[in-house]
Amino acid sequence: MDVAALRRELQLEERGTAVHEEVSRAVADAEGMKDVLQTRLDSAFIPQHSPTQLVSPRDVLASSLFGVRARGAPRHESLVLTLASTRMGELKYRGPELRQVDGLVFMLLVNMLRDIKAGVQAAFAPADVCKLLLGGYSGQSREQLRQVILRLQQGVLEFPRFAVQLAQRFEFPDDGPWRVALDPDIVELFSWSRQTWLELETSLSLPVGLATWLYGYVESQSTLIPVRVDAIRALCGSEATVTAFERQLRRALRQLVAADVLDPGWSVAQGTVRWMKARDLTIPNGFQHDGVSAKVLR
View 1 (cartoon, helix red, strand yellow):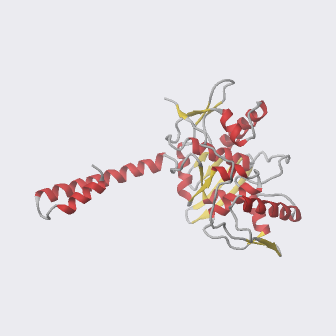
View 2 (tube, rainbow, N blue to C red):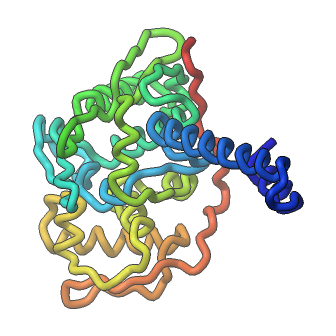
View 3 (cartoon, rainbow, N blue to C red):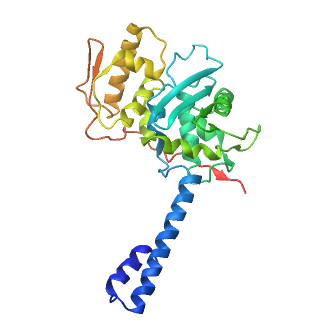
């Protein structure tokens, strides 16, 4: 019997009777077990979200962890980034430069493994991920996906007292499914700051780069306040010139309006962005995806 049913039964029993005392003990035991189970779930599983959602901590979406750079620009082989500073200490990243495509793959891996205990290896079809995120399945996109996950393996998030990898054991045979596991302690990332949920369809509808970064930033904010253009440029890790970045920003803002993420009344003037969230977030027409599935390995 569930806790709610036991509470209803308790209300019907006369106080002071043996039955009332017995049901009271049953309610206390059930509530205690519920708390134990919830603690175990919170410490071993990614926060719950649907197959059509992506989830990320706010501090990740509002940082340069998955930065915005020109597609052809060479990557930094090693970076140290301070992603957030709170009363608990600093959250840092050490590893190869990561970009928006790496972030989308990471969030998709989290989505695929959402019902699997962190640290348990699971199998997935690389073709499904390539088709969903990389524009199709080919030898080139397959290698691109492999390189992304290898970068995630090398990337380390440093908390004040421990560190975790963005991905752990990764197997990529020439034929058949690939296998990957998340760091068992990656769940700690989701207790570091408030979780933000993104619609997979909206992410897929946007060009990968500044538009996808801004989508995550917008959704991570309760209310959009005026922000300096140079502050956005620094947050997303762009190395474009101020003039070029403002041009890219205007284009990305128009794309977010088209995706029903932003209200069309935005402006960029005197180095400041003024904007509002769209009142009703709707998924763009023509997109229907059920996500990508992973299978736990026994």
